[in-house]
Length: 502
Image (cartoon, rainbow, N blue to C red; front, side):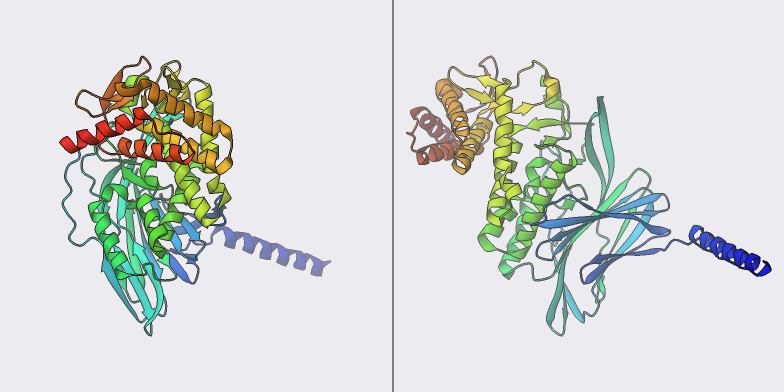
């Protein structure tokens, strides 16, 4: 009995010791995130991994793993996007007061060099719509070798510190954007790898991204140099600031809540059109990676919002004043372009889910047409430029470029599926343009931008966009076996004459 009692006391002491050890286990100041054969090492006071999980994605192209960490009052989120070629986009975010250091470790390297992507940056002029966008391209490209043999390349961004601004409207609706506070280059590099630092204060976010490549990113030095130049000169067409949620882009000043330094998930540039075109043309690994990154960002944007289309999540004060529309709402042109864009990528890369974006959005637009979200014409109709359930009975205008783009989208949906409902919709939009006829032409020979529900016209047209849409539509219609339209030809000629007279 005495021996049994002593044994029971010993077991209780062991169990108590185990419990005490778990409760008092100190947190580590270092956490390692695996990146295949490489490692991202994070250092911060009190740093601790809280959870790790995979998110829904497209397994044929990429897999996302999200790491959530804590460090005192600060939180750190890491999204590691493993592409199907073995490369990895890594988006990091520090929220709250704190500092975290990151090192992309390249063990075994005996040599490396850096190509500066921001040298001799041109001065950016003030834009009347968006002001000045100070965000710069990535810091540069780093190549690591061992005994003259390739190991890895990295493209590393600057860090971006911002504050989230929201405007609440009730029923869970809100306008959401980021106010940029600072952009910094904290990157240092050595033979051991590339280091960076994120620092933020209370109610701030600091974000940075990098791409780790298993093989050289550019097949030709000229392709790299041309891309460096393009990023500097055409900064509105590229994304410099990738976050765990997607790319942040400079927004117009006509946003709510108002800030001159507003950035948001702008659907127009979530499509990396230039990079995709370069990938299809040159097949460089970097442009393939940007193609997959853009498809992943658009796919994530839609799936995380549990939607079938892409809604704009920040309010345009112009739309609010004119139609009482606030975020989120549907911009039909952005959705048309996204559907065509994802379909193109899906068809090229063999991803059925992306190919389906075209008929899926075409069906959605047909539903909007069926509930009279259109501007009627004598014959046919123009789909309205925007849609929101909150607009009630207010009728929204239709712009010529939106309508032509949607007609072209319906033609492509018909060619892909052979379902005549899409052909009929394209025909009805074409009939609307023909029945409105030369009323689209302004006194100076240019075209009007939009037609309103009452048949009046407003706004100056884009310089070239609508002209391209007109030409493309005539070409598409001819390829279907249709006859050229004298009215559309007149619009094209008037626009061309106006441009030549300037």
